[in-house]
Amino acid sequence: MAQKYAKDQPTGFANFISKIAIVGAGGHIGKHFVEELLKTGKHNVTALTRVESTNTFPSAVQVSHINYDDEASIVSALEGQQFFIISLSVTAPPDLHSKLVKAAAKAGVPYIMPNAYGYDPKNKRLMAQLVTASQVAERIAEIEGLGVSAHIAMCCGFWYEWSLALPPPWYGFDVKNRKVTFFDDGKTKVNTSTWGQCGRALAAFLSLKELPEDENDKSPVVSSWKNEPLYISSFLISQRDMLDSLNRVLGTSDKDWTIDFEPTEKRYNDGLAEMKNGDRMGFVKAMYSRVFFPNGDGDFESTSGLHNDLIGLQKDDLDEATKRTVQMVESGWSPF
Image (cartoon, rainbow, N blue to C red; front, side, top):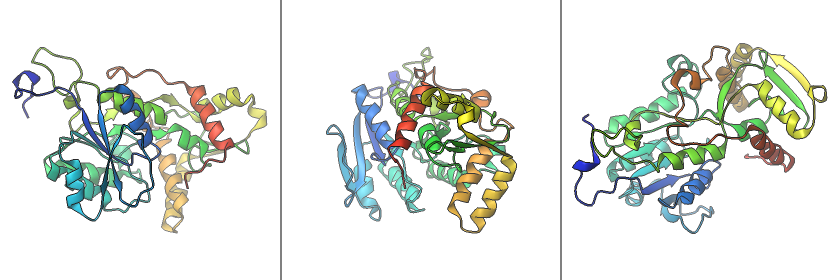
């Protein structure tokens, strides 16, 4: 497809993304998306939410009540929107994502950020074994197949606070009881992002121009990411790095922790077996263990590069993120 330029657009064309719709605006990541988008003062944010939902949103957010079983209500809410962000709970109906992207196509939405947050969808070796890979691939393929919207998936790794605060099937830590299971030797580095960094990344990205002004404009523009991942990250770290950060924040040392070791391949295979037996935690164990394989698959920063600098994303603070996580644990936080 030939490159489009702002200079060739019709009179009145505004070369930026101003109208943004989001499903999941009250969720763990969605609320950070909304918060950071509003901070820019450049965007009109519309939250699509079910009529029966009890979620509340900042006053600057426009709210459109929809019925997931009534496509017309979704299409109506999406008409005129330029960018559609989908953030769904793992408990969302399996056909909901498809309903949303089909409605977006009928509404003519140019860009969709699918519910495909995590690791590199272009890493074929990882995608062949990651338990979420087929779902991610199907979601991206459906958007392409409809031929209306471009997809831009946020490749951000696992969410740091979520994964560190939750028990061992996630990042291997039981912060409350000072226990950790190191996968292999605990030194495999993976990319991971805080919720706040994901929000800041989205806001920075959608503050770029949509199109280059002309053929001489080489600045980053949203349209350059059509059907490509947006690679962002807070940290490239290992479990060892996480424990070091916890020790700094808590004032502890390794002698205060029970440290165990388990091979990632064993954890991965055990997780798959547990999934077959109906244990939902097996899904988490297999997914996280596979990313920590010592072959570099969890380090997309080294293979695909990051877009942090290109979009003007500032560096995140590891110990501050760990401190927030400790506060979550101490407060009894649970997403379930």
